[in-house]
Image (cartoon, rainbow, N blue to C red; front, side, top):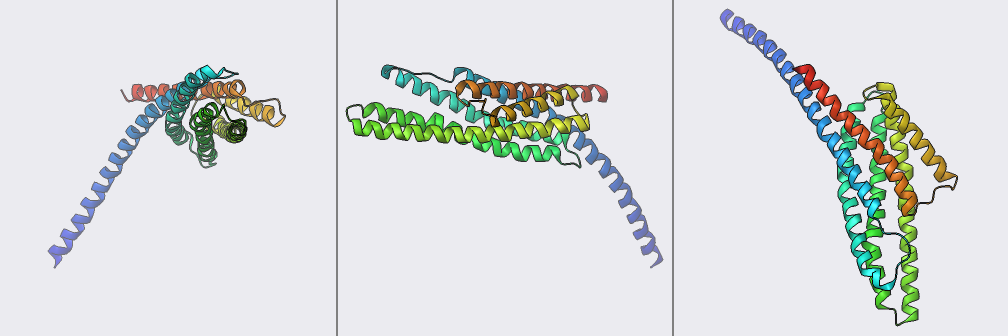
Length: 253
């Protein structure tokens, strides 16, 4: 019986040693995973933001003749399809950014929650403008011989425009609030350059002030200005995440 007790004692000691090694291994894997997350998140933010810039740069605007409707429809579908493809990229990048800025005050976590709400709104806006509008325009052209039908489809087009504007407004408010929260987290944590936090706070506050005061019109031009300003912030954040990973890799070497 004494021998058995000694063996159990030795086994417990060996288990404690193995647990120590296990914790060391987990810590190493966690570091490597975070470095990879920074890299992928940075590229996701950059790619998604560039895609949104291209979308607004090529977005059709202004009045057109009947003969130009079909080319404009194809362009609408193409640019909004690109915008929809950028939505998951932006969310994945924002998720990684939140992980880098996460702290006990939950500012970054609140930012990703609000930004997810913003992305849902802009998805609906893109569907309304890029997928619903083409069908309405085609019906409007096809019904040109019937004044009653034309009036009905014009009413439908106007309603769809208001839906698009409502979702765009929700996106601008929510995304600006998210950038404000992330920028505050950057300033507090110093995980990234504080200059990015300052720019984000100014951008978010100015955008919200312009919108609520009625000085910001969310047509293709006004909405494009918002997208360009936010894209600059996200591209800078992505570049800082990439540079941070390079610094961590250099420190390991």
